[in-house]
Length: 422
Image (cartoon, rainbow, N blue to C red):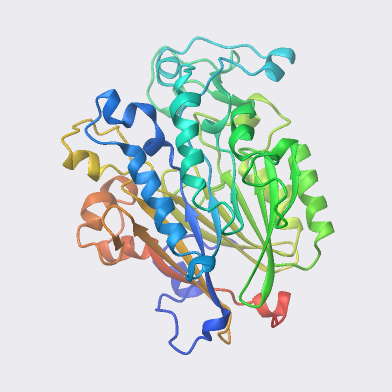
């Protein structure tokens, strides 16, 4: 049953209260969630390119903050996941595989200008990504999934060209993403980050899809990371990973899965399935994979600007919580620096810390949103609704908008499915 992310739904399925003081500390831990970081790393958002500040510093500060909270450093973060779109640009007009399969590009003045291939992705953006995630290397299990921007190419498909008159996003023309050579160079299975790590337990297609194990709160968790609009082969591989690790509470992360109204709909500007039927839409990922495997209890995603939450029953009648986090469009820091273009997104340093309280009679996850720019949580930022609500959720009250980024999820059937842990 779908539970839309509204105040009424929250009263039914969530407990919007602080974590109980009596929770057993040994059963508490957090995972850090890094939403789309592309606008920090974008080579055009640096001083050398004429931008008023170095966006990369915000990205690096996020990784410093997360690194300081790791369990290995005396903190509570047991796992870190990047939701994709790590960097912004591409290096090819079309990847060799799609060329060989006969795909064709259509001219698209808007998109061709915005996403023209550039060597700067390899010279500036990818090295920045590597520098940031190096702060986690050897200190914690972590995962990064590829978003559409992390592909080698993004082009407009000849069968979905832009319309002569653009009235909405659906008229701009359909992009398609292909090739992951760049991603594999930084985050592939044979990269320095993951090769030989005992917690990096499986991969597919060079690391485009990957699996990790981490232990926390008395349980062993399985995490499966899937590429943007995962292929049929990706989903078959993920199902096999679950068969190899039966019974483990499982988290799935994929870049594009849910919009900020909680709908599993693809973005009208880039829907890989519309161009290539071998790729899957978000709803297909639910139907073919997530709903079919009872040990999946949590899904994380980015891509669509904003935040959303929904809970659905899988085919076994158990709850699957699905969480969208993406702050790339926020730009108060740019406004304060004198950038008057409303389309320039940055991110303002916002990330999520999800704290699991598995010692409670009924386990919970406290979701908190924190900015490493403002050094405050969303709840403690007085201007939060004034800065962001009109663009993201204008129909909500200020209090309900705060509730989108500061809430507690009740895992009502976690014990039934996974036992009491150790």
